[in-house]
Image (cartoon, rainbow, N blue to C red; front, side, top):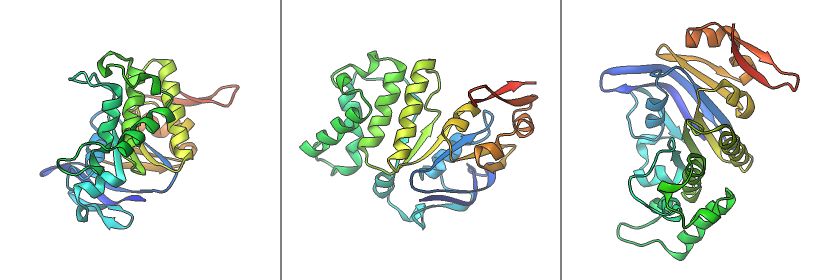
Amino acid sequence: MIEARGLSIGYGRRMVASAIDFAVGIGEVLCILGPNGSGKTTLFKTLLGLLPPLAGDVRLNGAEIASHTRREIAHRISYVPQAHAPVFSYSVFDLVLMGRTAHLGPFSNPSARDNEKALAALQSLGIAALADADATRISGGQLQLALIARALAQEAHIIVMDEPTASLDFGNKLIVLDHIRRLAARGFSIILSTHEPEHAFDLADRVALIARGELAAIGSPDATLTGERLSQVYGVPLRIECTCSSYRVVRPK
């Protein structure tokens, strides 16, 4: 389990958001929504132990994150950034193999077991055929799946995802969302940020809204993502509509 207890986040003396409380257990998906600049990325950096809390604490399985070494944190939490073109022409396999770094000694090379774990991660996401491809020459959706595969190869049971469907086309968004749903079913604890409330309706067990420097609301998608609350958070009049297939969409009033 990962928990935020009375958490205040920010940089130095500049507080970005405060009074953040939540816990994510096995197989749960927590979606974080909020306007640009509300503190979602700052929250993720704090959850990963890269930024110290300004107040409160982050706990992993009941122990403060500050009590864990970087290696211990990497064994428990993996991070999936937004897809971006890699600077160097790594193969997709080598990109995924980097997820095994936390399991290697300072000067050791990947073992046969590390290679097996990387290949298994690629296979589990259906992209093993891309293993030898240049990671700079695959589609955005394929690269996003490769970054998720890297997190799986890390063998951490908590996965933090920063807008995993950002800049993807409609088809690739559906593919990534489907794999996130499968990961939760396998028992992974997932915290992800998104700008699309519909994804929270589709995926999340709970939703946290961060706005105006605080945790504005947290709860089930149905209870939390109301038209009135979303209008307040984003500053534009919005309403929730339900399609004939019971799919909920957010529309302007």
